[in-house]
Length: 161
Image (cartoon, rainbow, N blue to C red; front, side, top):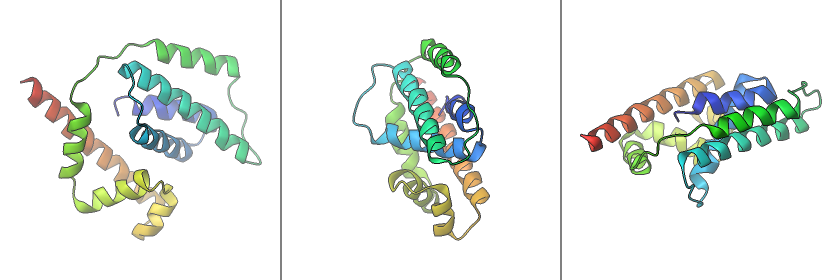
């Protein structure tokens, strides 16, 4: 989640639509949780996330009839290489903290995450299921993400103390 804005930005560079970029980020997050592959480092996970976001953005563009022009492939590869070269500190216990924090969420928030990430519904489908507007779902997801981020950081800080 600490790289959320950067991964969303990588998708936005391709699709040039904030809502689609957010959907791509959420799909990448879902894939990362579903994968049974363990990454050697946070850097490997982030690199995989950038590449996956980029590919999903390109796939989305291909499905669109009037797709906007994206950046040149050379520029995208340079950006991707730069992001992949950044080193990240490995944080132990992050996965367990996430599980604990998910358990602490209100039922409605867990249901929102379940529909979006575990059942793979797009935000429009989630909005329909909740009987609310799409923007409200984006705001709720953002609040839940921020709540989870704060909770995880708190639990990791407690573990250090």
